[in-house]
Length: 386
Ligand code: ADP
Image 1 (cartoon, rainbow, N blue to C red):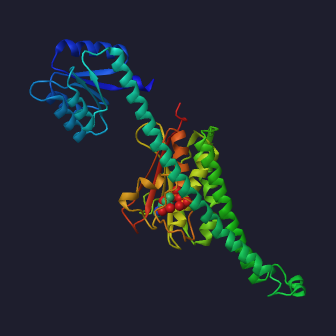
Image 2 (image 1 turned 45 degrees about the vertical axis):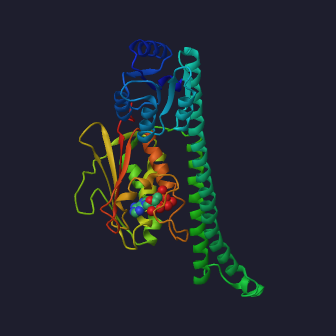
Image 3 (image 1 turned 120 degrees about the vertical axis):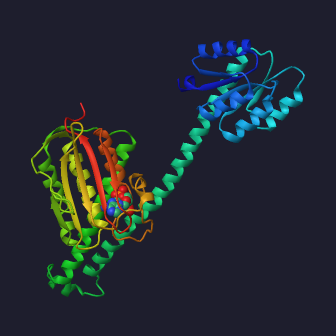
């Protein structure tokens, strides 16, 4: 049980009481530390990850109320139980006012104390569940707002194009029948419909993956595959987009011209997921790079361990230092403005990270800053991490 791992600090000037509590609480499975006075106790709270403090009130040098005040100053999340002697009701009340979780009258029964500790544990659990729920609720609201917007934009374009193709006010029926589907005007409109439909399909695919991921319903289907084949696939998947944006993609050579041997490597991995992950990184690189941008894609064996490292480098928008970690978060988009031509809902990279983690690998991004391009790198074990 999680509660058994709790760290409890007993502060009491009586050695016998410290030993007794230490023994009884250790028996219950808690980790127990002791301090013979307030100063030593505060030092331990500052250093260690203490969850609960049980302190005597009446101690020479520094009394329990002062200890309580200092603890609440340094670590307000630490819960404090104060042990009071009979007839000191006022101090007991003062301790509560100063933030003690509760007080217990001395001499106390150990079961009484254990009951209080369990109460603290369940309150802590409830509080953290509440934080989780609030976080989830916020995420859900953002999610719904983003999703609805992201779907509405391409749908509006599609509808607009269809209306122009079919509108009876601009084209009378007879003319519509006569109009061949491949006039430049119709082709342009059909092109819009196709692109925007692809965009919606991409969004739906990401959402489905995200849902699978969230329910833990995602298993890898590992097999031995050639890295060159994965590269061929990923490049093919984004070739239309690259063509449209006039992006140049080079393989096994960095943008600075460093060459990497193209000797094929066989990797034990989920072929579909790894090529999807690369496709995702490549398509991001195209999306977040100006037209006629440059992208480099290469793999290499890492010097340490039996790992393969993939790099997707671009000379595009780049990422500010403070956002380097955040881009892998769910729903995170550096450019939060909702009116964007490119980009999705900020799920792509969180899915990429999940795929890498399932392969027991690592993923990160490097960028010298805004406008200075990005380098997305990930490693996975060659033998499937067995
Ligand atoms: P999105 O659906 O917005 O593309 P991603 O999870 O794929 O979501 O990416 C999250 C954010 O990371 C993007 O919105 C973008 O701001 C930033 N990003 C991703 N790839 C690049 C890149 N190659 N260059 C610059 N920024 C990038």
